Image 1: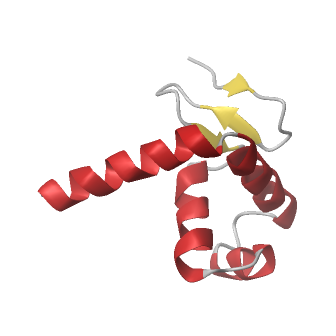
Image 2: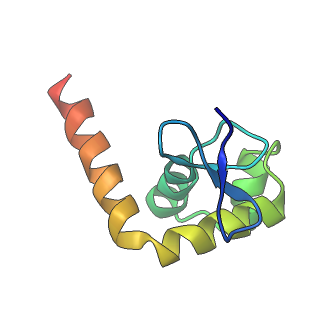
Length: 85
């Protein structure tokens, strides 16, 4: 099944319903977690993840801020699951 396009040029929804950065396997929440945890700027994120173009990073961050409540809930759920293990 093909990914579903979004209104964000570099973000699509994968077969599991997760927003991912187009052309990569990186989930938006993975990039955002690094941004929030380490306080990395888009340029620093690009340095850390050179396979992700700067335009993709900005698009993913815009997607996050426009869908913050849902993505924060997803990150919280992932954190809780990790603590259970």
